[in-house]
Length: 391
Image (cartoon, rainbow, N blue to C red; front, side, top):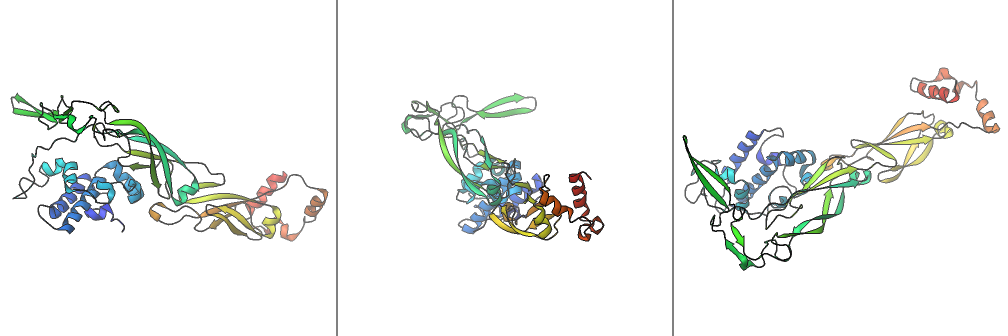
């Protein structure tokens, strides 16, 4: 089943500003909020769908990728749960805690069982991993039709011995006595304007809420080790040099259970032996012999899909552009196919045998070869002939 357009989900247009985007999401979130629709599976689905759309569009980088590539641009991994809505509602409250807990819905708007503003939720464990960037060269054929690449990426992986916890065993943890497991401490400062409360990560446990008594010997308590992983990347058709795809959570593993960074795949378009690209169209230069240009011919020319026949009409002039429909690049989001244009040139030999020279000389004075018979289109041909022979 195809995914709905994120702008359509939120009921906004593509150029929507940050404030209007947030307002639109607030409206849908209030309408389909679980506390207002207990036991309603359809409402929960719409609540998650709106959250996924907002999670992408509120981020300028992800939004730019989505605008350019659609759902393919976020690698099928944008939004919560990899874009398949297989995530818990609590993930939404965790991601948008400042929105749901900071008056986004208003104070006590859901009476009886609503989520408290200060639930005392402990910070996420560990430290997030860093993003990775990798450049992959793509041929024009791969760009034209899309491709799947398997990339060997050297990165930090979750420690297989401790499963990323950093501890020798599950029993080697104890709650941090400084923050009582919250991962944060509050400092109250009295000023002339009243009390100022500053919340910061606990300096004892670095915001994790717990202390490791015995560290894992494989990773020295880091919860991650250096290694290599093979990652599949689906490249959509129609990408361009300098475009990039972001694969969520495919970067370096986080420290001690922290979330993984992203893998940013930068597209590098390699030069092609035969073709030059212009958007979704491609150009190919074909040189004809004089007999082929004069008499016409049916030739096989290379295309991105293999060899194809091309009809050369009699009296074809140098510089003429022939169009081969649908032989170009498939656009992003399957938005149509470009064309292949064949630019024709005519090879004029510089050295002739006596027989060839006699044959050419016999044409002088022939009405069909008189310059006065040329059309506007053909004037360029005779100018080139003049340049070649130095006339």
